[in-house]
Image 1: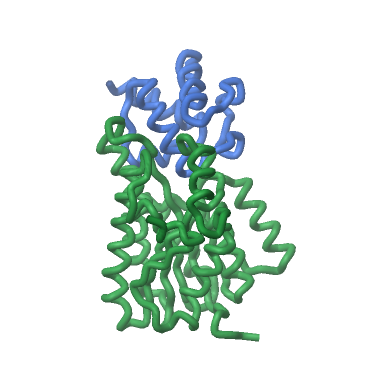
Image 2: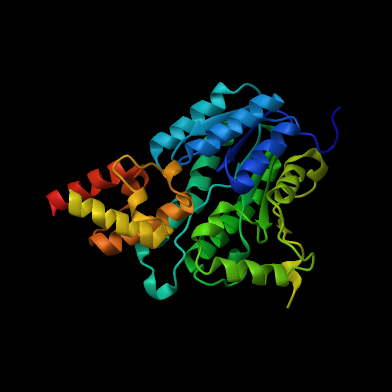
Length: 252
Length: 80
């Protein structure tokens, strides 16, 4: 039974096999979309997602592609063509970054980070434009670091700020074509990424302390909002930044 | 080759807090906790510092496993 929150057609989710992206892939498939879940590095996680999808009968296809390379972008385009149905959505969840204080950063760190977080989104939007259906939803997954200063986060924060600004401008240009672009800002979500971030235990504990709901937001809570933004229920929402952070960002 | 692998193991230890003995020529990202897209850049930074090389974006993405890291670093050393 369809509802305002149902999805249809096919949706590309970059970084769609782990963490928040995995939750988005599963939620979108359960909501009715055929999902193309992109990944690059972790085969085991991708295979696990495929197994789970098969168990539940969910239409999730994997696409292993390096989004920072021309070949990878071609692979994405082929995957989009291969999966039937109109392209009703695109969620850019793939992200990377060098987490170091400014004194230890180089221009190359900036280039590495921007290549996936910003330039890949730009390139994918260019590639996907001919395939979008008459009404489509695009979600750029940003970060609190785009709006606030976090330790050892200047390069990543800058890239997420650039991503959000680009998404906002595209929202205005593409809304007349039926493509709604919005920005999603997860709060502190416990994913594997935290394992390699500096001082993670202390920062996670502090984040929980500063979150009004008293816990971290879950990947599925973020995925629910991504689903909303791509659904008919959000047909009047364009260029908006939606925070899913348990209230953390409103604390002074 | 042996010295290079030792240095690469040191980078894995510093970047991803991994027991160096877990790292061999056959190691792939699935074998190492934390070797995801973020961990990959942390690892690349450590490799640059320890090995005294610089990686561009293309080389970064070609480093799919330890074997390719060795190949890329050796190629850079041969051309320097």
